[in-house]
Length: 207
Image 1 (cartoon, rainbow, N blue to C red):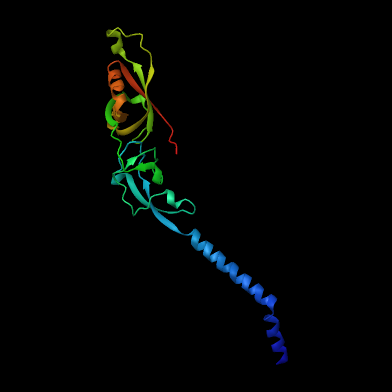
Image 2 (cartoon, rainbow, N blue to C red):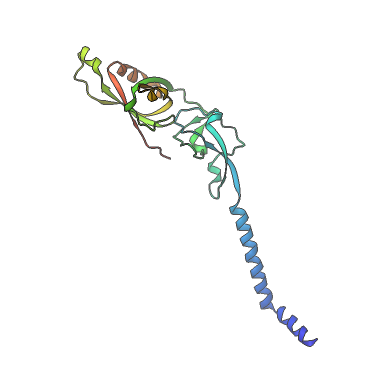
């Protein structure tokens, strides 16, 4: 009986109790950290490439569950409706949509302008939402207008693709493309149509 009491008193020493407390505290901390790291949020992501000036539609958006530890405030909860907002900077397909990349105010200075280009004068992977530079290459029409001295030149820079009619590309014809052009630059583009074919140079997406 005395032996058992001495064993119990050994376990109840301050050093033993302190060690047991530290072990329990470490397990508790590990559990709380694990729970915090597993915290996820439902946020909006893009289903397609989006260009500056585009207006978000329901088909452009999808809800995804992600783990955000330090920057959750930078992204938009899927509880907040954002269809109808305007895109302020390029957003890639499958990219989470940052709150600073869209605005509730539309840009009235952007106009949708259709152009037609030879199928080989646009990048094969070009699609809606990408940003391009538009170059003018003098066509045969300049021979009849006395403007044969015209040279290839940059006509517009940082123009967003609104939509593409790719069906003609499959048939080997020209491609119909709609550009989002700043209002004051529309006359410049239109005046170049008769004497130029257009070459599109795609810009890399940047965050």
